[in-house]
Image 1 (cartoon, helix red, strand yellow):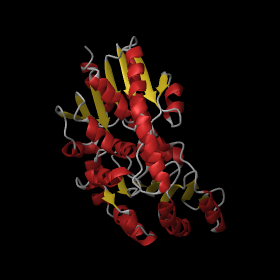
Image 2 (spheres, rainbow, N blue to C red; image 1 turned 60 degrees about the vertical axis):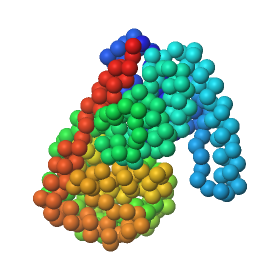
Image 3 (tube, rainbow, N blue to C red; image 1 turned 135 degrees about the vertical axis):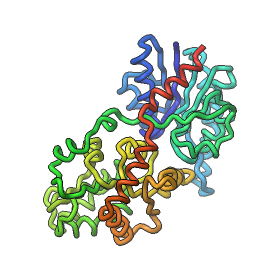
Length: 372
């Protein structure tokens, strides 16, 4: 049995694909798995580190601008698309896969389209509530379409019925325990914990909004806070130091550059303040956490807004758009969740009800159903 995975660009696309590929190898040790990606994105490191072979093609996305640099980039993209078709065909002919799987990113387009044209069974997975252009196009050709969120289906014109599979969540997140995690972090039983972060790089608008909240609470000590400024937030560490923080700590507030024990921190939290990436939302659902979602307005198709609204419309989260984000607006929303236990418990219950904790198994079953 041979399975070809096509994905790349961000960890949000790559890690779920690796989770499914690893599960298939656990269940079928004789399965041969190959990934196609690019040489200049995260897959070039993550896929080999996970123990899977990777073949690369040269591909890029289009930029929605008429600036000279964007026009030049888009012309190169057209050339790369033309060349990528023959490159994909050669890899597919050499590997002879039983099924080809697209997990998102620009690389999925030419791989899945080429495979479909060659008569090889294909399937794709869409992780966002509002699908990107690549998967909208591929849905018309793929034999199986899988979505993480039911809301995505209405935006797709599928060749066949779509399946709601969820998005694979790390095992340590699913297994995390709140009481153990709070004890591990030394959080007092009588104080709520607020966890806030803007992704691994950080988000300046969130850092700006959180600054006054964190400095004020460091003096009052009403809540415990863990906030990540991200690897690009060095200036904020210096700002907190000038406010009396030592090594990122003051009172019940801890400011970190990066959170490397996310499973512990998220499990311990009573409220999570975060962007609305698909993987993060799947983890919030798996743990049943109340959250304030601040979607990034800088992503394709504004998909984080749609991701957030999938929860908000089910009373499973609160949303605060970046255009309305201030320390005051965030503090008001946060205070309402912290002070109202019934409201918070209702949100937690609804978030938990949305969780699909066997996503990798569901996805693997659909992939394997296409193997002749």
